[in-house]
Structures are given as structure tokens and as C-alpha cells.
Amino acid sequence: DAKTTQPNSMESNEEEPVHLPCNHSTISGTDYIHWYRQLPSQGPEYVIHGLTSNVNNRMASLAIAEDRKSSTLILHRATLRDAAVYYCILRDVNDYKLSFGAGTTVTVRA
Amino acid sequence: DAGITQSPRYKITETGRQVTLMCHQTWSHSYMFWYRQDLGHGLRLIYYSAAADITDKGEVPDGYVVSRSKTENFPLTLESATRSQTSVYFCASSEQGWTEAFFGQGTRLTVV
Image 1 (cartoon, chains in turn yellow, green):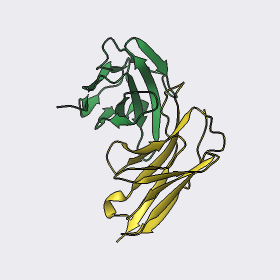
Image 2 (image 1 turned 45 degrees about the vertical axis):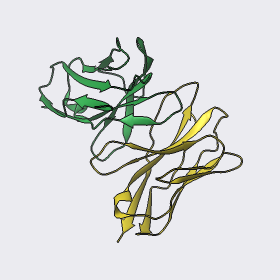
Image 3 (image 1 turned 90 degrees about the vertical axis):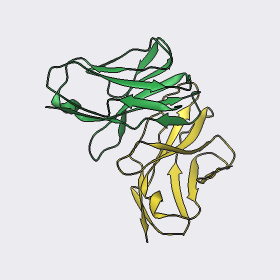
């Protein structure tokens, strides 16, 4: 399985942008880059996913490097409700498995 | 209501008993997943399924059995519960192998 590397933790101030990096140097051409988050005492929640091009939705933006070996999840204006563990996951279309790593714990300061 | 639901939400059982956790989704998604999450730790994949009657082992399948006779249901059975299986269990589904997955609210299982 292609693996991802994320920082253990990040801190941010409320209403400031948050940039969450993810390295995936062994990514294959059939891997989609997925991001999920898990708020305290809740199940995981889908955030965004992409293949090659940058993606935007109402929750976040996903910036994918040209060589696809890294990506960045961008929360444009962090709120206290964005405090969660964020997971960067590679999902192979030929395998369909969805495996979670340790993720990045994001703390938002008021 | 559309969505993915797990039942029961909470369960206490005794060591050695058989327990079945239910997962039901209303979207007719092909792909379904079971995870466990121990206190303070990440999610570990137990089993997953691409369609009715197609299942695969994940990272920690020992002690668990799954079946998928209908697309919308994916029950997880602990054949003989042990204390080490005390955990929160999450079920998920996705339409395709690369699309977003949706998670249930979780089942908190305690084995005493």
C-alpha cells in the first residue's frame, strides 16, 4: 500500500488559514488522494479528494503537487469547530481499500 | 431517512458471547467497510466488501466474521467476544472504490 506522512500536530488561530501537508512519495497513477477528519467523539467525516488537479469545495481546498508526491489541505478560515484529527489517505481504484494512518491533530486557538 | 446507520449504539457483553453489530445503508453503495478504534488510537480496518458476497480481510480480521447477502447490509460478528475487542466500531460505505466514504455514528462495545 502506498503510504502517507503527516505531521503529528498543528496549531492555528481562529479565522486564520490552516495548511495541512501530506507527503506520499510512492503514490501510483491509480491512487486518489483523500482527506477525512474526525471531530472529538464522532465518526470520520469526508473532507475532499482529488486525483491530479486542485480541488475546492465548501469545506476546504486540496492543492496537489505537479508530481503528485505531496498535497496540502487548506482550511481557509479556521473555526473552533475545525479542531479535529485530519487524515490524508491514498485510495487505489484497483483496490478500493480505505486505510487510515495516524493523522494530524489540529488545535484551533480562540 | 437516507444514510448509514449502525445498531446498537452501545452494547455491553460478556467474554465468550457472540455479538453481531449491524450496519445498514440506504444509498445502495457497492463498497462497505468495518473499522475499530480503540481509545486514543486511530482507525484500523477489519473487513471490507466490494459487493454482495464479496468480502476482503483488512488489517485486524482475527476474531471477526462478516457477511453481505444484501447490498445494503454489512453485519459484523464477534464469534466469541474477548476483552481486547472492547472498542468503538465504525461502519462506512462508498459508491465507488475511489469516491468519498460516509461513516456511521459508531457502536461502542464493551466486553466484560
